[in-house]
Image (cartoon, rainbow, N blue to C red; front, top):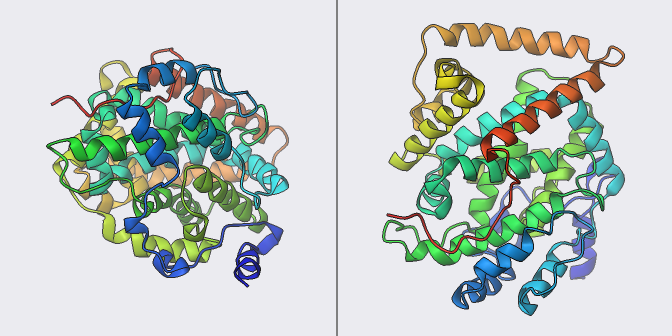
Length: 386
C-alpha cells in the first residue's frame, strides 16, 4: 500500500514526474524537517574529518568534474560508496522535461542570472540561520571564493546538458552535499555558533525557495512570457536538483501551488535581520560592484537594483542602503527593459544571440570571482578563523 501511495504521489501535472510532497512538509511524511539532516552523507564526512583525510580527498576530487566520469582511485571506501549512490538521478527524473527546461533557460537566461545571483544572494543574507552559517564557516573568511563556488552551482544548473553524461551538475550537487555535511559537523564546534546543528532539511527548503519559487514568482510579477510547459519543466529541474542536494523526496513540492504554500510556511518566518547578514550583504554588493567597474563606482546602482529585485522588506533586513537618485530610475527602467526584451524574443535569432550574451556574462562572473582559476568545490576542514 505504501508503494502504491508513493507512486501516485510522484505523478505531477503536465506529464512530468515530480517528488511527493504536500504544501506542509512536516505533514507530508509525519516527520519534522527541522530535526532531519542528511543521514547518508553526515556520518561519512564526519568520519573523513575525524580521520584527517579531507586534504587528500579534496586533492583527488578536484579531478572529478563530469557527470559520467569515473571516481578517482584512492578515495576512502565509505566515501566512494556514498558518492556512487548519491550521483544517481532519482527514478522519477524525466529527461525530456529536463531538456524542455534547457530551452526555457536559453530564452530567460538574463532574468535567471539577475534573480539567482543578486536576488538569491541578498535573500540569503536576510535569513538568520543561513547568514550565520555562511559567516562562521570557512567560506565566510573568503566571501569571493565562496561566491564563486555558489555561482558554479547556479551556472551548472543552467547548462543545456546539465543532467546529461557530459554535464557537470550532478558532480557539483554531490560535492555541495559533502560540504553541507562537513559544515554540520564543524560549525557546532565553533564558539560563535549557538544554533545547534545547521543546514537541516528545513534550512535547505528555506534556501530552495529563495531560488526556483522566488524566481518564478518574480517572472510572473514582471509579466515575463512563460508557458505552462516551461513552468512545469523549470520546476522539475529544481525538484531533481533538490533531490541531488540531499533534500528528501517527501519534502520537495510537487506543484507550484505547493511550492508557494510551502514557501510561506518555511521561508517567510525564517527571515530576519542579523549583524552577520548585514555584513555579508555589504561585502557581496561591494564584490559585485568592483567586478563591474574598477573601484566599485556602480555600488549605488547595485543597491537600487537589489532593492528592486528583492523588495523593501528583505532589503531592510539586509540593510541595503537607499538610493534616492537611482531607485526611481530602476523602478521605471527595469520594466521597460523587460518589455523590450519580451517583445524582441520571438524574432528570429534573438534567443540565440541572447543566450550567447548571457553565457558570456555568466562566464565573466565566474572568471572574476575565481580569479581565473578553476573553481573547485572542496570539503572544509575547519570553521572561519576567529
